[in-house]
Amino acid sequence: MRIGFAGLGVMGYPMAGHLAAAGHHVVVYNRTTAVAKRWIEDHKGSLAATPMALGNAAECVLLCVGDDDDVRQVVTGEHGLLKSMARGSVIVDHTTTSAVVARELSAACQASGVGFVDAPVSGGQAGAENGQLTVMCGGAVADYQQALPAIECYAKMVRRLGDVGCGQLTKMVNQICLAGMIQGLAEGLHFAEQNGLDASAVIDVIGKGAAQSWQMDNRASTMIAGDYDFGFAVDWMRKDLKHALNQARESGASVPVAALVDQFYADVQAMGGNRWDTSSLLQRLRGSRGRS
Ligand SMILES: NC(=O)c1ccc[n+]([C@@H]2O[C@H](COP(=O)([O-])OP(=O)(O)OC[C@H]3O[C@@H](n4cnc5c(N)ncnc54)[C@H](OP(=O)(O)O)[C@@H]3O)[C@@H](O)[C@H]2O)c1
Image (cartoon, rainbow, N blue to C red; front, side, top):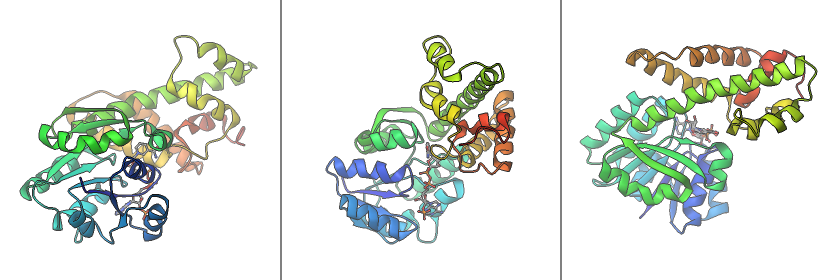
């Protein structure tokens, strides 16, 4: 399969690298060309100057860009993928977006005889680098099956959850669960500190009990150290929660904790934490103290 990848950011760069490591010839496009050139030095493959050129060179194109309008630009823009992709080819979007844009772009693809799978990911930078991502897919069964061999190159779990849009809806569930969990961990650590406990020792103990979580295992020590300059950026989390809260309003789902935590992230942004990891909710409780 001739594979194309668009968007060589924190996630896309290593994801495309796993495709090359699996033996595929990968054609890459990145808005900032210098990054694509660096990727080719690292992994071989070849360069496409525009999404249109990428679509011309590949029968399966995967992308991981920013938000709804970025995906629109890459897929249906003036020099977009649909200007050149052949009938019977497939587009896989790993960007976290609204379900609305997934359905809109799927319809545009269908009119050109191109398949579309929305396939947001979870597992962060480390998951992308280690090829251990969880991939949540929505789309027609045939399109999903066509894309699966490529996705499996960097996934530890991949599943089709339903028609187009269901991947994004599942990712919203993920982010709703995450928001409450991170705030809970931040409050627990803050409480421990305010009461003179050794927070690391507390985590050592309660991490073996019912309060254990991925966040506790992977973020508690950096939170205690006040280190947030890595990981999943607060700006991205607010984008994801915006989509989840819009969808909740539309569907009548009640998600008050997610809505509250979204406002807490707005406070973190006001503290200058736009690019801090989402675990920086603790910093909001500490105020100016404890930042390394
Ligand atoms: N980082 C994480 O831990 C994580 C985890 C799960 C999901 N995600 C999601 O994955 C997506 C990408 O995240 P990331 O952390 O990899 O972001 P990132 O490092 O900022 O990379 C974004 C990539 O998209 C490209 N891009 C953005 N807008 C574009 C446009 N309009 N046209 C063409 N290319 C465009 C950027 O090109 P340039 O090089 O020119 O800027 C860059 O290659 C986001 O939707 C994010 O929510 C991220």
